[in-house]
Length: 308
Image: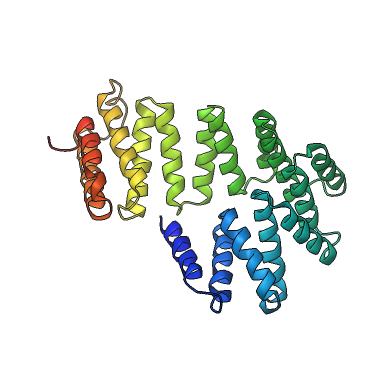
């Protein structure tokens, strides 16, 4: 949520800057998109192409080519192929044998639906650099674009066997497993993501969501723990975790197996935690979206976590 607000604020600065004040806000916005690894292709293509066209000379050398590559990818995403070709040619001229040129060339073929050409580029380069993470990831991306999820999963599974600390790859593999409803495998991936980035609130929620989907008293119980951790880390600001805690608590308290095992929280403790989450949700919606309060209240009443 904070990341989204930051991007929205930066974009608003660009929109209100006017022609004379365009350079710095646009530059900051593009930098923020790169740092947060967001793919806001329409705005990046529009603002980035304007920045390169009008203020290219004001960018430092390193930043110039980062922006050029960033805008080229956005142009491919938005199918602005004339702009993409122009920028890919610029990169190729500056860095003729570089990985960034190979990546953009393959992405161009992929975006145009020329899958054989895209695969040829990757295959030829892998012969020279068989352990290139960029090329191996492009292989996965190509299979995803072709709609071949099974092949993408197999390639990515082999990739994480070698590059075990690539958190983004584990997360992507988890998403692919979710697409084909292989939930236990997805849970393993998100658990790995969480181990590598224990401060990331979203990782706690993702893992808890998968456990909730798998179901069963043990998984519901673990899900409540991770939803609660996300709520704690976000100071009660993560609405998805608040909803998740309420939903998992309903399932847990109604489960016949819920009281089995050691160190199991009592139904009363679980209910009290969920009631607190429900009150926090009501307070947040009352402050930020009062028109949604009746809907939230009805949902919480149905779950038994709001007074009738």
